[in-house]
Length: 299
Image (cartoon, rainbow, N blue to C red; front, side, top):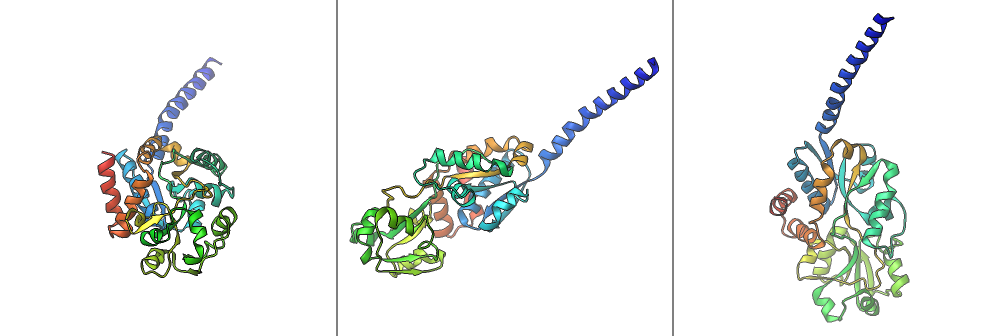
């Protein structure tokens, strides 16, 4: 019996030693696995994802970049583990993915809805940035001054004088023109024509339209050529920038959260607009813009 006990104890000791050896090795292997940083196929997402990648590399992590993922695919990609982290927006998560209405919600309320709503999918969010890329309507500044329009109420009153450039879905989506009509009164525009979304500012510059739907961090809004109209009845909820993260990746890379929180704390609406201007107006490469911003703001 004594011999059996000694053998048993010896085996337990060996098992304990092996467990003590293997567990850190497994953890180390997980943390050494490259973090896959994705982006949507729009410039702001690509620029911010590159900033995320630089921040993670600074922490010593290996990074694999996966840019230009379709809007329709990226959320399922991160659920499947094909992407570990990518920049999105609280409003997109709440309204597009969770199918909840965000009208009237504050930035913190939207962030909580987004954070809590995706936990069941094996995902989480870190702290949201102050930068808010929500829906908006802009006009050429000269036209806004000509018709004395500063907000959506004034646009509604002058709608019969305004040619509106749409992008094919704005007049149909429940949270877009129909919501404007519901809250502000009917926008009886002189005309509504559909154009490629990438041409809307050019169409306004050419005088073919005097107003169009925009995103509030568009680079063109950093110039004096265009004026963003105030949503004075607050029909559009906050769309604050936020990292969407696969929880397994977050757990195996514990420094990821702090690194990205530091970045997002500095990405204000103005910062995002300026980054977009450099890429979309000045024609700079998004990787160069991201690297310059990171060196100036994070070192």
